[in-house]
Length: 227
Length: 405
Image 1 (tube, one colour):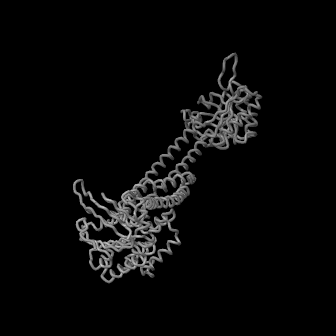
Image 2 (tube, chains in turn blue, brown; image 1 turned 180 degrees about the vertical axis):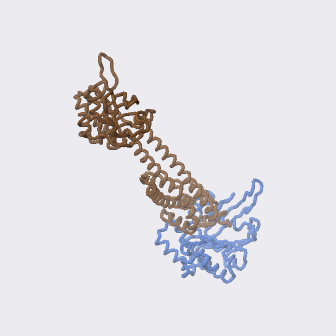
Image 3 (cartoon, helix red, strand yellow; image 1 turned 45 degrees about the horizontal axis):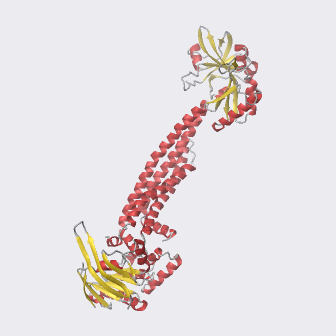
């Protein structure tokens, strides 16, 4: 498998005050292949979310090398990172992070605003993405008119809509009941199987982690197991 | 994100908080409305004042005969006897910018009524004198064209002269003596007060100029000619036309000096228009303060809005919004707010101006200039006060913004 994400001695230190530092990552090195489905596990504070933010181009490492599809991320500008987030990465969050008082359809259209997709095409692609996650009705409903599962489907549709190569899911089932959580995981698994989208999943539930092909366990900013 | 999409996003955000947007806009509405109303009222005041001044005789042009030079000595104005009643008539007939003309013959004289006597100035004029000076008769009447033609010995008294000679008595119909010649009093002019230089304008007697020429002074020329231009703007034109005409009539060759002088009271007008301009500027700047307050209101709300929508900013950034996109989004919101405020303010301002002019009778022309300025100002306020919150939004860290509760 070619190396899709490559991390080498990744460190991330947060400076809370001048002398209080938090070492969130203490030398993470790992490779994730194209089309892989990886679950990152660990207790809170283990650095799994920090790692996810780094590969999601939301943050830059303090030291170490990180590349996505062969492209070194630490040397990119904010705008270039935004470009990557827009075109190549889709995010799915625990709390859905949909724009409030904005319809499902418009939420899904959002990434295409920033990649300047013309209006008619935007609409079609958004509807298509919503269909793909099994949401055929309620596309003009507002988030607060949807169930948690439906909201997460909208979020996945939004993550999908710009045809990313990577989907990052941060506790995607954390706010859902077991059955709905299962459904959401199945959608992600289908995307991985069917479209070959690489998926990195952060979770602390073993049941959920089992949907992935590979489980990596973080503790105190280091990898303790990888299988 | 393209331009129209940004505008749509901004519009939607404003619609979501209708009441708040409305209240924010109100500050700009009041500011713009105040600027337009006050500036229009200022120019209304300017027009009113100009009218009042022209009532005092600001459109007035005075033509003096020039000086003669004899053996290197230049005498003063009025020593040339070239200015005649025919010149006055020609000015009225041939200068289109001139509305009214009167020949003036003036002289000082001692006047007597019974046991009272008083030294005053005698003005021999034509009928238009009254209108040029905007000086109606208070009691009795002015002399007529007949009186001028026949050089009748009649006079109209200024208020001061009437008081000095007659005390409380009504002078109309009585006979006074000017230089021992009996004149019948036809009327008394309304009080006009002092000139700007402290001269009592009511200390005068007005008689037909023909009478003054023939019976009092024995001359055929004029002391001066008073003319009034059609309007304030045409003063210079009138002056030029009169000059050309008189040079022609007096057969003055190219290169030779005029034998007359045309003077006007433009200085006075200039002073007053400076005053009203300052007044308008003052009113405008006071109104601008309210526009400024409105702008600060926008900034305040935008800052609240940015904080409140931190999460939204985070979401937008996570799906690929660049900081420029976020900046533009919030800037558009601020500018849209102030543009709406500007538009409503202009409409209200025009309405207010018209109703003020309706109820007070003030001439308050709606100045396109004021509207343009107010509009530009409103947009400027939006950009200026929207920029800081928008920058703040665009510089957020995506992770912190996403985690914001």
